Amino acid sequence: MSTWTQVHDAVRAAIVTASGYPSTKVIWAFQNADIPKLPFITLKFGSLGTVGLDYLETSTDLLRLPGEEIKMSVKGTREMSLEMQAFTASTADSNDALAVLELVRSSLLLPPIREQFEAVEVTPFDPGRVNFIPDVPNTEFRGRAVCEVRCYVPGPLAVAYVGYIETVEGEITSSDGVGDPSPVVTPFSVP
Image (cartoon, rainbow, N blue to C red; front, side):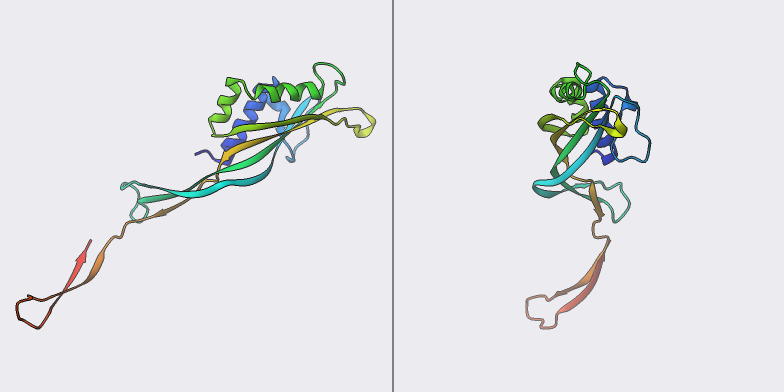
């Protein structure tokens, strides 16, 4: 199972490959850093919902520390939205924001892109529309397009370790069953 950092890294790498942009031009939105010069793409994960029911998966490893031999992992699937925004200086050619995001969206079906998603168990399954929403920041035109892709991702890595019972102590009460009315009480301890 992948960590969220690995999921972020793999998704970004897939979009870098799909767009043909250098990795410095595909960034996560809302980072505390300057945006790159045009063109660039921002990525953002949106809502996260549970698909179906989560379940517990257990595994045993007797070489773990005593009391931690049994690993209990929460397993499940989440639906998450990936929002992509392309920003360009081009307005009406094959390098404008609409064309760039349409290329990325269409490339999600290509094996080299799918493999990067599959490496972290992410499945893009519903590529939404590519919408052209031009900006005019600081009196300069900037092409902008947005596209939201719904994805299935594995549930978060939630794990607890528990152990076998180390010792059992108690008493055994027995009688001979033949006529001796007094029971025999024997303490025991099993490691």
